[in-house]
Length: 65
Image 1 (cartoon, rainbow, N blue to C red):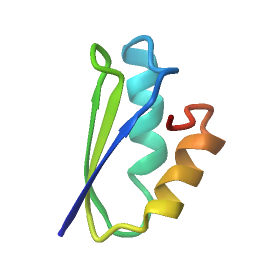
Image 2: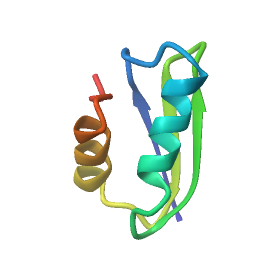
Image 3: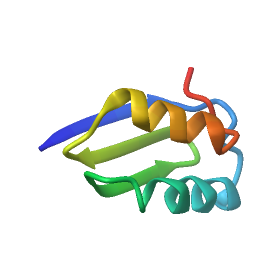
Image 4: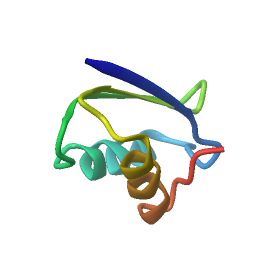
């Protein structure tokens, strides 16, 4: 299992966190997603492809830094 953490400056509220979680949930290989509004980070675990996760975040309006 892989764990990837992304700094996402556009996270501002629980609504942002919910949108990100909902976007990542159906991605193949994603097992868990944790969004921390205070630190503006997204942590994803599972069998992951960094390029796919970055693309999903960007398309969702939350590009990683």
